[in-house]
Length: 133
Image 1 (cartoon, rainbow, N blue to C red):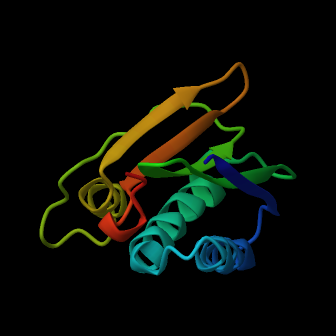
Image 2 (tube, one colour):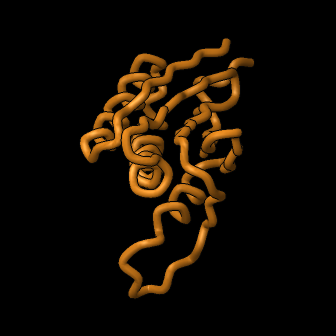
């Protein structure tokens, strides 16, 4: 079984909450309740990064979920360049923890470069009750 859902979001602050609502709705539909909180937190971080760092003015970003028998893959594509670097921020730093947290919550993490932009992706193992024998 392979399922895919995606949605585009405009470059504005309300899109971060809308992207959380989108992934929550898809995961509820797919009956993957155990993954909702982690994926919701991760899409918040990735959508915020797309909004602040990756999307030139006037462009959208795209959030997608793909499911197969073993994994759920969260993707956030924007039209901005660059590789992401997971850093360990100082204890008194006001920012810089998001990608470290995302990397800890996900089972896989990567960036695919495109001619224009990039896709940041995370994978999550399916809960044991949902694995296909």
